[in-house]
Length: 467
Image (cartoon, rainbow, N blue to C red; front, side, top):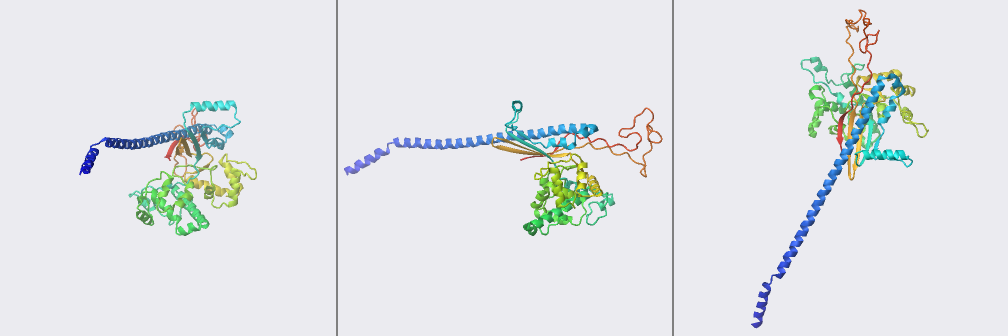
């Protein structure tokens, strides 16, 4: 009994001792605060890294946009030089078009690399340039002419006027049902449609011959329907009168897609076409554009473009053409870029790619579609890539150098005769009265106005993408 009472007093004493509980609570609090501190430090570090990355990306974007601004400045200088050359024929003969055009294709790299053999003057000049610039990071800017010229937006047709039954009947008629327009009276839409169809037909045929898997997957692919789908995509449905349009519309309804029914603003929209496989888009994308080109660049022309212009060309003629223009390292022949359209024409005739009448026919066809051969471009693609710390930003811009339109020719009287002379002319209509100058653009002794020199307007950005 005595031992029992002693044990009970011992338990009571131990239960009243609180020293261990205080220590346990302090240790628990320290553990909780340590966890909260670690979590808070981690979150702070993550947000700090995000802020630094956002700052780096913003700086990289500013540097990339500075590259586009630099390209605009180059084109502005080029515009001034070209306009001066066009007004001074003697000076233009001394400086070939291709020579000043080649300046635009020179890439710009920052920081500017300096060779080991650079002189002290060059090094000091470079140091002064870098000290005076606000660019940060690395910058690489390239500018090239657009080589593709087949514009699906040219397939657009005006909405027919219900008050004009002739327009409603002829508008958007299937080209397979109407082959009467084989002369020079083709519209730009007809010409582009024929070129697109020829290009797609040839490329799909070659792909089927080279790729058995492609041939199995797309054995029923019809180039004619692909072109009609392009027309359906860029046109108002009311402008089309084609029995196969409902079939194309059913493809979009089944895929749950909606056609734009408006001009394309980017070639990437080709990937949204319901009936166009991605592999086909990749095959033909480099020969197309959604912007007004105006000039088929001869020095940037690819093999596919050359075959599109001259479908009868042989592989040997293609090889000889590019060996002449781009040079042949095996034979030690330097590149000879075209300095004028006449050089291109002479090479085409010399290689027997086309006869002169065939060449002139091609020129006439493309002029009817608003395209001309030339060594100077009017549409350029600028790729500006900037890197700052860990961030990298690429800006792609399409810049157009529009040409000032020529004034319309004077109206002619019925029968093709010149209009009656004005009061400030002789009754013969040839010379102005004594003491007066001939009318602007009309030389003495001629009734037809002269074509004014080409005048380029300020460059403008027509497409801008940031990646």
